[in-house]
Length: 188
Length: 165
Image (cartoon, rainbow over all chains, first blue to last red; front, side, top):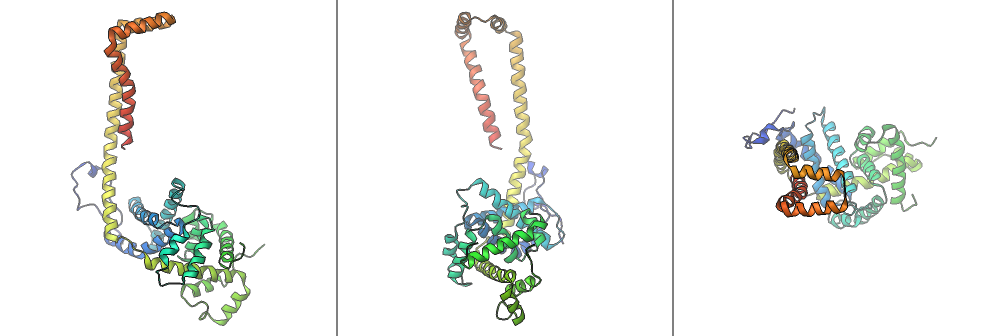
């Protein structure tokens, strides 16, 4: 499916030619993969960072790192897991680097403000979700999002978040309980 | 041990993802979820989150794939150029350091007053040292000033050169 591609359209006469500037994925394959994954990945980044601008930046960075990693992937699912793993790591690094920019509690109100124009779901329901998500730790938000927005398997979630697979079931159960309680207005 | 999974969890999740929950999920599954804490939580959480995902995905305004590809290519190329230039810069820094070391060694080996100063330092006397320093400044003021400037400027030049990388 994938073949080696070089920057044939760029000038190859200077020192850069000596260095490796190839992506393993060709442009057509990348385009298809991007179309299939970018929206879901952006939504994931918005949810785990709580910052749309940052999500935009991290999305671009995620695909760049994916291309530069030059890893060969066995399947579409494997490629997809890779970008989610990269995105999660970037979001975590960004949070560590700039706690002022990425609040510990995500900007739920900001998300809600923009989301209100969306036809899907009621504004009240989304406001409840934003508030509930805000009360969770970043890793808990990521875990729930991967499980219930992306439909990722336990193995995929464990891989993307660096959690032992054996611990995931219990962690997911506890986080889901907490979230259900928050959504239901109960004390978690 | 507390139960953390339910055998009907996947069915409930499928019904939520396919938009069949709760009306079209079937009475037995709904009845089970009404009694099962795990399935009830799965339905509530998955329903809210998948709805939120749909809303976010619908409003996402993302750059197109070609633009992302081109920008990635350009950035990869810039990084390759920087990486190619890095060994040259490192070699230049090493060569400069070697030249300075050699210059210092030649100066130390040929300068009689420098060797004299070293000898006097061995038998240190504050008054004599002060007088010697004044004499040195009077006789070789320009050279001493250049040396002091180099001591402060060289690290600054290195910092700027390496900082650009």
